[in-house]
Amino acid sequence: MKKIIFSLLLTVGAMSTANAVEGNAEAGKNKAVMCAACHGATGISAIPTYPDLAGQNALYFVKQLVDFKSGARTDMMMAPMAANLSEQDMADLAAFFASQKRASEQAVAADDNTAPAASTSAGNVDVVTSTPAKALYAGNVKSGQEKSAMCASCHGVDGNSPVAIYPKLAGQSASYTAKQLADFKSGERKDPVMMGMVAALSEQDMNDIAAYFAVQTPTVGIGESSALGHKLYFGGDAKKGITACVACHGVQGKGMAQAGFPALAGQNADYLKKQIASFRDGSRGNDSNNMMRDIAIKMSDSDIEELVSYMSALK
Ligand code: HEC
Ligand code: HEC
Ligand code: HEC
Image 1 (cartoon, rainbow, N blue to C red):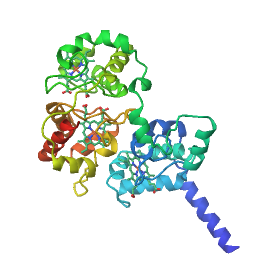
Image 2 (tube, rainbow, N blue to C red):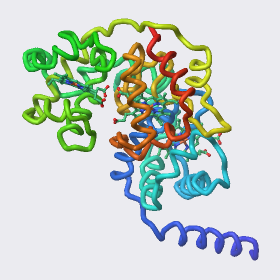
Image 3 (cartoon, helix red, strand yellow):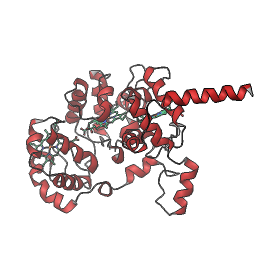
Image 4 (cartoon, protein in one colour):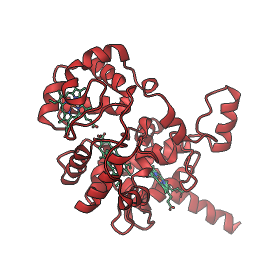
């Protein structure tokens, strides 16, 4: 009897500290977008070394995030993810993931209503990267083509910019491109040329143009690849705390459209170099939760050089 009372007291104690901040599952759902690349949109991870989060106990969940943030639990991928989360963020995320069905339950549900074979055996990553970009965003390809005429001088008619300092837009996910256009318009991402270009575009224009470029075929990468860059891309650098790029930008460098992670494969080298340098010195700061800035700040000039060689040569 004594034992039972004791454990009851422990439970009540733990609950009352956690309840100091109440989680909101709906808010958590929005914040979980940046977790999706590794843990899946509904908390079922497609990669065997990443844990499922669906149905996890909220108290345990919050404690892990607190520990990743304080360094009491170390993991080079989770440390930068947790670093920017507030107590409220953690509570919201915990509430969202706790409310998701565990893997076995999701598989059954998918069988029941002939939903597309998402998030189970096929794996979230495959599903996300193979989903046509136009299905993910509300743009009209045909009107986007007309509206993109004024972009062609720099980005090419089909989004394959011939000049190295101008990025390729062909095949980039529509959601990412539309976000960049909106960020140039709001000033959250700064570039004198692009800010002028987007000033007169409406949200619909941006969605249409983004949809048009998303369905164009990118030309393959050129230049010499880098073995060191390959290693960094897939393994990161634990000593420096550089998260592996593959986690968010994908095995083939095609990004993850639903999570807002851009494709980098075959992108023009000078452009890539400038972007990483801008994240590193903070002059580009439109990445939510400092996701890229926290990584770039740990990169040396030669890290950037090798990574850019690797990514721009990716076929
Ligand atoms: C770049 C990949 C990556 C991203 C993005 C990521 N995680 Fe993780 N997460 C991991 C890995 C890897 C582990 C396992 C760490 C270990 O081995 O200790 C983990 C572990 C966890 C755990 C502990 C699970 C357990 O059972 O102990 C929680 C909780 C968690 N992540 C939450 C999140 C949340 C919330 C986000 C988004 C804000 C997020 N993660 C984003 C890779 C990632
Ligand atoms: C005069 C040349 C020029 C024209 C015309 C131009 N752009 Fe750009 N664009 C650039 C430059 C330069 C950058 C790189 C900015 C930077 O360094 O951040 C860029 C960047 C972008 C990006 C960011 C790409 C990424 O991978 O993040 C998008 C999206 C974009 N442009 C879309 C457009 C669209 C849509 C139009 C037409 C409405 C357009 N641009 C017209 C020069 C141009
Ligand atoms: C935790 C996820 C994550 C990881 C890990 C990550 N990135 Fe990113 N990266 C992003 C996001 C998100 C953006 C787009 C931000 C925005 O909305 O503008 C981005 C943008 C970029 C861009 C700009 C692309 C463009 O078209 O302008 C480059 C270059 C880049 N990342 C390189 C890297 C490299 C190199 C690594 C590994 C050392 C890496 N990233 C690791 C999430 C990540």
